[in-house]
Length: 88
Image (cartoon, rainbow, N blue to C red; front, side, top):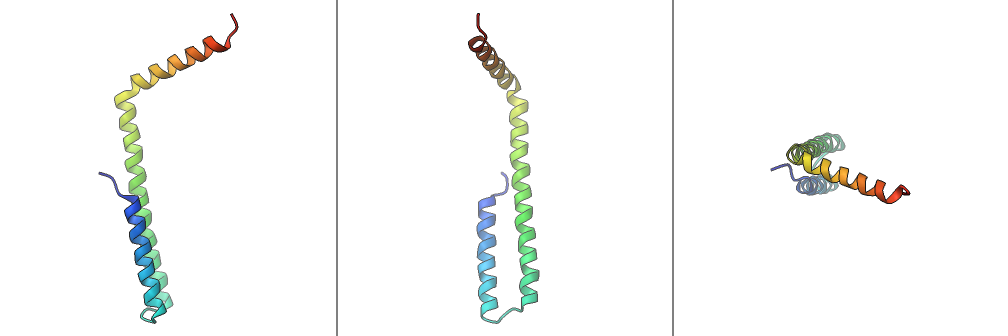
């Protein structure tokens, strides 16, 4: 199954909150915060890319499996629209 983007986002925010709390307590420096935020953003970006690839692959598979159905329904819709719009 594909990447769970919602879970990755929740994890990102949880880690960001932990980092903020550590900074407020003086346990980490501002430079360490900046470096860690870059790492967290890269992880979230990777999860986004995986989710997008999973979505696109799902659409591609559906298109290949159901191409005739989509084309047939589209053709019927075009014919019905044309029949209703063109005056006889």
